[in-house]
Amino acid sequence: MCDITFSCVSDPKAARDLVLGPSGVLQGIRPGKCYIEMSTVDPETITELSQVITSRGGRFLEAPVAGSQQLSNDGMLVILAAGDRTVYEDCSSCFQAMGKTSFFLGEAGNAARMMLILNMVQGSFMATIAEGLTLAQATGQSQQTFLDILCQGQMASTFVDQKCQNILQGNFKPDYYLKHIQKDLRLAISMGDMANHPTPMAAAANEVYKRAKALDQSDNDISAVYRAYIH
Image 1 (cartoon, rainbow, N blue to C red):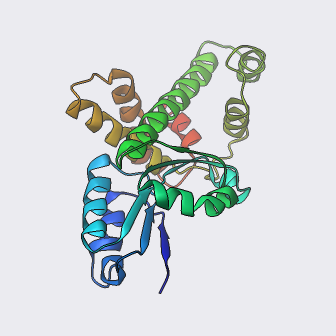
Image 2 (image 1 turned 90 degrees about the vertical axis):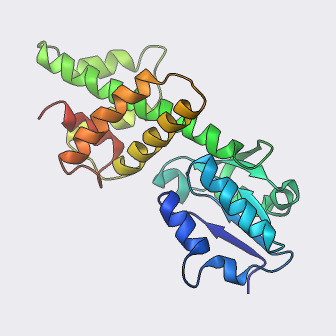
Image 3 (image 1 turned 180 degrees about the horizontal axis):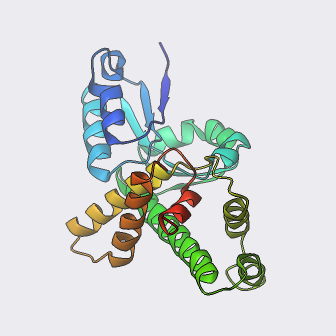
């Protein structure tokens, strides 16, 4: 019944199932109806969904979001959009409610590519911070002092301060699920393979997150990658 349908689910399979599965969204798509995919998935999934939606006369936009659960609650996400520009313009008020800013990146698939690159960097960075914290401990250095010094330098950020403080407090309540950042690293590495571009840093970080998942950290925050270094 809706003119515009928004989707935001966990992975490519869930995104496909929501559209193509039994009683899927595709059955309700009619000429002029809009479908906006806000999940972080691979470009190939976006291309497939775009094709099936538009084949029914629908209008398609991808709009994955950068941010955490708290930023989502506060309406402060960064929205990356690509696909049908007219849908992007028609949904500007919705995006203003959800996020602090949005970018239109051209043809469908570009937002997925950009989001995977961003999350690859974030996931690799979080793993490196965890490695630094545990190396400080292993060499007899104060982890709190390491954090204090870090937060006075060029890498100072709210992200670093919050994640490190949570680690030191043993608080791994999920603000961004570890299993989701590992999924994004995996998809980014695959994207690099398809582009014949090396991603050795992401590959190394991915292995650390996989170890954290093996230690039952999937449903904890991404900062729980720290536990992969202490077990």
